[in-house]
Image (tube, rainbow, N blue to C red; front, side):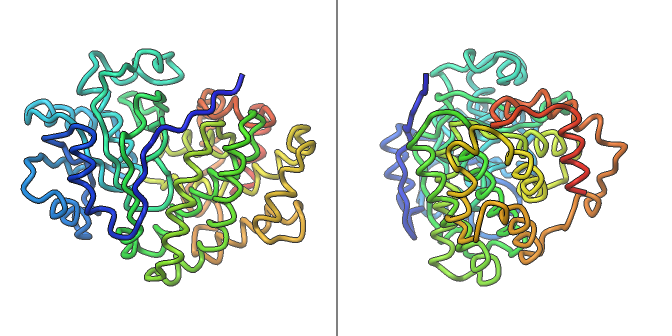
Length: 378
């Protein structure tokens, strides 16, 4: 049975951040906790959100790490409770929005965060008591503003997924103007994250035609505009289309992702300093090659349809085109450049096999398959 579910109200426009007071009133938030990170604060983007809120009483947690942790969630949840907050505004990229989702759980549910992790059977334990969230993305990558999941590093150092329809933000305010000052490398890495979402979810075998259409259109937009957004950061059309590609990738990945994310979640948990989008970009070519022989991918001509969306001659050109795109964007050429060694492979593979994205790859990967993908990505 296919579950097809779209529930987020999205305000999408240049200047949409000014709608924050309206959305707070609609959702019923009177005293928000704003969850953000030091970079967003330093760039002046947090102040834009505060200015839009006017004199509304609020608290600010600005210490979200680049890969959000259970410790950060715990600290923010304590602030939420101490300040008497009744909702959360997440201002930032996927890290801040995912941290906010963790806070929405921790501030309203008892027990350690791990108890609510998907692979621990925790999805059913997340209830409607979660704190309401308004998400204001400042990057075009994860699309967490319209997604039901969050990725967090828990106290035992595993990078785990938390999934519940109760975690979907009540409102997403997508303002491409907030991304105009994003540095080139962060634009490239987050943009490749969005493209990875579109590609992986489109390759997934699950039946969800609306998600397929959204993903394919998102891939076309992202592929056509990522270089312009990276090298010409003030290009408003490119920024708008990248934010749309990001949102669309997340709307679509309710189908499930695959080996790209299994590997990047595992490696990112092992080394939290590594950027998730950069890892996705590095793993994409090897995983697309691995999926080429999958019966469901071949039957539905999925790679051929992706190639058309990417303006490539044929399906066989996709892996090399992905690698060449990363090179043109200035991203690392391989895992070795990030300090990854073959000695790390066993731990990476073990956690990839246990990751929630492993089972939704169109072709089930073995430990040996993952090892081959890692070697190809070095």
